[in-house]
Length: 254
Ligand code: PEP
Image 1 (cartoon, helix red, strand yellow):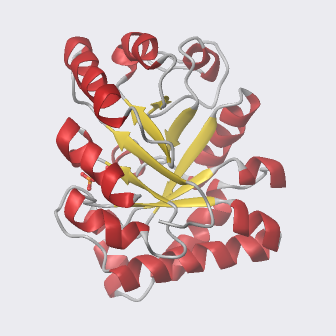
Image 2 (tube, rainbow, N blue to C red):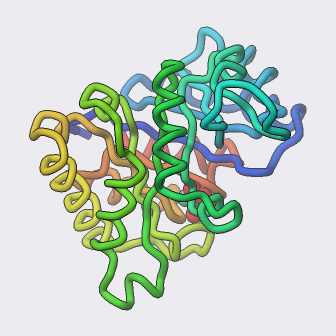
């Protein structure tokens, strides 16, 4: 597939997999995906498995991501993990503002932008998640919600930092539900986000930023979604937990 930007496909394992299970999956993925050069492949295990997975992905084409991090660098923040601690495991990416964290931990756009700045300061690329709920879509507010989330979550980032940020458009109603956005819905949302980036930054920045789609991506719909002009990859939840489905999503996207 000839794409303007290199595809980036990341697996968000959420709160799944013990260290031993994580190691098994990564060993299998390394074998299955050894020849893939066309896609940036990222796995985001739980914190507890980062150490083990980090050793296994060394010298492979798989990069390591985390699922969250603190906006602070150190200190009295019980239960939090700082960017510098992720760097110890050669973490290259961090998912920020996933809708589950926005919902359950009440993460705000302002907090997400602080985390994004802290990630960039440690040379970790944030994957910043945005997306509307079903009620918001049905009320015709999708663009308004995306506008607010993109502006707020990326506030204060420099042009260079924006270019190194990945945005994940994840309609909340499509996450873990088996319902996928139609190609038209996905392309419209991605195009809207890119045009907004052009307004907020420059045309060049907007052309360079990679925007992933997330929400029930599976091997059967990956090709169509990844072929859309403004879709530059996928953030995959459920289907990233098995070598067959994650591997096939990647292979079907090329
Ligand atoms: C996600 O949680 O980021 C996600 C896209 O999940 P799923 O693929 O299971 O819908």
